Length: 571
Image 1: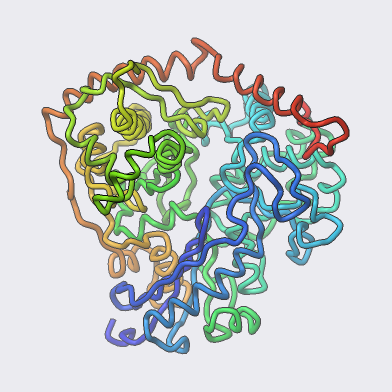
Image 2 (image 1 turned 135 degrees about the vertical axis):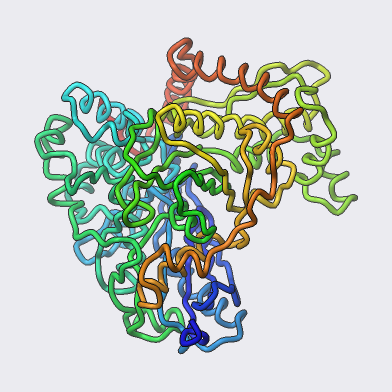
């Protein structure tokens, strides 16, 4: 690669709250500089702060697309400055996004929320991945798919998620039909940002397959969609269908306008978009069968390649070429992980703990982790269910909620914190067991994302899953993965596998199971599975009923004459 020694690529990772850019050397994947830019509007979950400030119903999560452009304007130039390099040496740019995050637009890509007449309409904004208000619509899609014997439903573990394109699109139609009619394109944010960079609208194979129900070249039929709602019949033909680009291909070339935003040369390759989790596997050099990559942050996404096609109950999906061309790419996930830990620390921990953490020069998370690490396995007497943001895999039900059992008057904050950490590891073990029982073996757990900084948590995951746990070397895994795809799009490597071998890396078996701890965790996990199946598989639907009671209470709280945020969903 000597001829590539001076060439650079840029990767940009669009996360839940911010975007991160990294400048990478093509020859060996060395990260030369990085920068982060927070979204001005963050996530709108309670109020439409970018509009008229109206209250949003439960389970909504919206964003403002111009915040994504600000990342290009600020983070990319800052990363170049941090690297101390000239943008003229950059030969390509790649991007990844949270998913399924959807942007309603006009035919030219203009987001509807940018139009003054729609500024105060919640459905005009980006629906973030964790917008879970379309669960009723997902339920109808799933029920009809099984009644009709649709073959594609098996590729998604038997259930599609409320997070995905079709459920969110159906909610938009039935909540705000006027806005649905005004919308020309229903665009994955991963593709919208590439559209802004290159001027070309190309669907990426990853999002289209996992979130857009594109299997074997076909979407759900017009007949199927018409049965759901007659006005939804042409959803694919009129709002969704677009040429699909394969991962590692160039979607187009950087436009002069985007070059001015970023400080990069006009005309360089812009890689086809990708999803944050899936793009990380090459960054960790983990693209072989059996290597499950867990990207652990606010949520966790599990991705891995397999040599054969299998239908795994409750998986998010399996897509031919969804991660790497020539392999079956599998996906599963947990809707809440870091978000659960943050919720607990921000809302449930006494001030005295925060004061002690400050005296020690620690974050509250670090202090609670140290206290929890001093316990024996099971000493707290607690078991929790990690469903505070619903269950993505393997139950695929966002009407589920968190649960903690075993509290007494002697239960301490560190006890609960440890139980929550353990619950997320149990959730990952349940996913691994689902894959292995379906003939898809998992031989190595590879962790990326912000949570790998917590060494106690990493050892806990290794103990609970009884797997060697490897860790990605990069602290910017998705951005590095996007840079790797940019290098392929620019022609520096023949394919993603070759680029991953040269540019990606991990520490193999950084953590290995402790047999004594693993045996004790087996006991706790058995209790977790009993609770999991009882509350998640119909033994007691109290969580569903409580969600319904909460929604009714929110509606009843609105003052007389107040403008409702959205009409109630049909069905």
